[in-house]
Every structure is written in C-alpha cells, then in structure tokens.
Image (cartoon, rainbow, N blue to C red; front, top):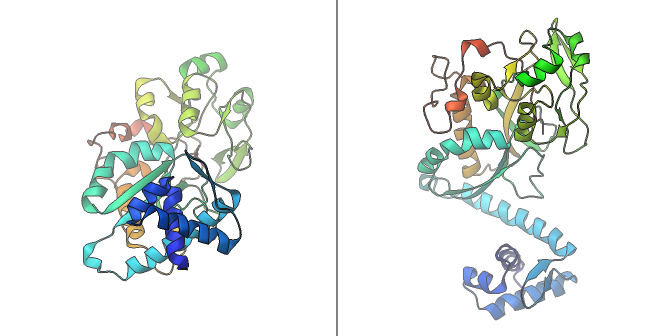
Length: 338
C-alpha cells in the first residue's frame, strides 16, 4: 500500500467531505478511493471516518491523523516548491491569520496588488484576535501585535501599533475628564480579556520613564477589537484602541482623546511563521509584501510619504488612516494582544 497516496486520498476526502468529489479531484475511481481508506484504517487499526448515506465525519482518531497528514503533505509540498524553477514565481494555497481590524482596514483594501504581483498564490485569510496554533490549524503565517512568546516561530517586525486613550463625549459628561493617573480611580473602562487565560489586561502608561500598570474597573469585557471600540462609542467606559481604527470617530467627535500626555510603550507588529530550513516561496513573498505594505504608513511605524499621510491613503478603505498633527501625542496601548 502506498502510504503517501493514502494520506493524499484521506485528506482530500476530508477536505471535500465526499468520497465522490475526492475521487473526481484525484482522477481516481470512487471504488479505489473507498478501498484506499478501508486499507488505511486496517493498517492503523482505527476508524478514521464515520460514514452515513448522506455525510461523513471525522472520528477523534481521524481528526488527529488528519492534522498529522496535513502537516506532512504541506512540508513535502514546501520542500518540493523550494527546488522548483524560481522563474515561475510563488504558487499554491497560503493560509494566514490576522487581527480583524488589520485585515479589514489595511490588508484587504490592498489585496489586489498582492494578487497582481503573485497571481498563482491562493490566499486563505482568517481574521480574529485569538491566538491560533499554526501546526494544528495548518496556518502558514500570522500577523500579531505584541511580543510573541512562541519560540517555535520566526517573527519579523513590520511596524508598531500607535494607539490612543479615548472616550465617548456622553461618558466624559457623566464621569468628567481625567487629567492624571490618580483620576482613573473614579473612572470606568471597557475591559479587554485574553482568549487564552480569560483574564482582563491591565492598562499601561509610561510615567517618568517607567511603565505603570493600572487596573481599571468596568462593567463590560470583550475579546474582540471591533466590539471593544463599539462599546466605547456607546459610553460603557474609556478605551485604548489602535489609533488607525478610530480616526474617523476622533475627527467627527464621536470619541475624544484623554490623557494625551501619558504614552505607554509602542506595541510591535510582527509577521510570524514556523521555523523551516526551506522557507516556502509563497510565505516569503507574503512576508516581504506585508512588510512593504506596513512600512509605507507612519501610523504603523513606517515612513510614509513625508506629508503626514500614508502613501496609500487615497486608496479605497484607507481614508481611515489619515493622521493629523492634533493626534501626534496619542497614547499607545494594544487592545488586540493575542
């Protein structure tokens, strides 16, 4: 029995959720696909798939075996692609994961440029603030804010998140405008909690050159960046969102900056991927492209065009990235730390 072929057939059946569709994709008779799966289960001495007349589903053993197969087949594909003719350019499916606001406001509006440059790369984009397991979820690379703790990843710094402390006008009317750290004892914050630990993150300010964590009271706690801003707009408390996310609200007056004189340390943004001696051309292409993209905007730690605006601010979706002199002293604190 060809074990490598069996892995390919098994993963294709799972991906297609159908023996027939898997057979069509692989160019094999359906009976051959069925026989290969049966022989594979006999070899492993476990049931991999639950079958009914209408659907199939993975058993726990099948799910574990699928993860291993996906990783092994992916490594084989990456190794082979590293030796192919470089002139053909990167190709294949690339799975990435990014925080929702970065994906929606920064990545997606520029995606056509990546496709024009690398038309043979198929992007599969996951968006959210949770920490993903690159191996278990078969993700090729991630964009994340904060210091990455996973030593199995290679991280490339591509910028820093510039943040701002702000609140809705009706909140400030009820609680007043804080002017110093001590005033925060009388205030409330929308809390942001870790999806991994369930604990709320402390706020952090740089006072006299030293980092000062501050525990804030609050009545609402979320783990999504956009929900975090929405709660701030509704007056549930002060927030510290990414500055590029709230520029339109700051300009319209829906949010008001507070404590501009207190600035915590910048939050680094990195693109990270698994350690691999032969870095896939498609991963390398995406990493280089996204570093170029982030480097073009001063709001993300880049140099921009020297005029105080992102060099791509006129592009669709980038009107939210305009910067003004009045915002240069904005406080910095990441609401999407995972």
